[in-house]
Image (cartoon, rainbow, N blue to C red):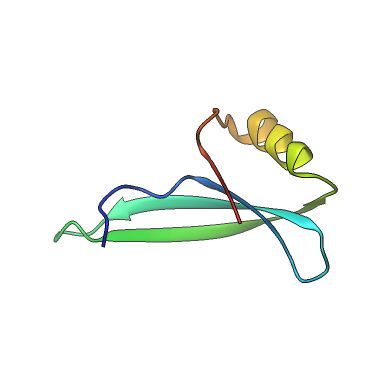
Length: 69
């Protein structure tokens, strides 16, 4: 497994077709294995751009910190 942290913001469509934002935190255990904690944001977005804007405004996201699925 890679020891590179995952991107902290995941933007993906849910089953209903709504765009959702997930916050991810990566930490490493004593053997260097990455442990990822994911938290789904309650708000739903119409577009990927709206989700990015929300992350930038509320969580201080920077370009390059996003992953899309």
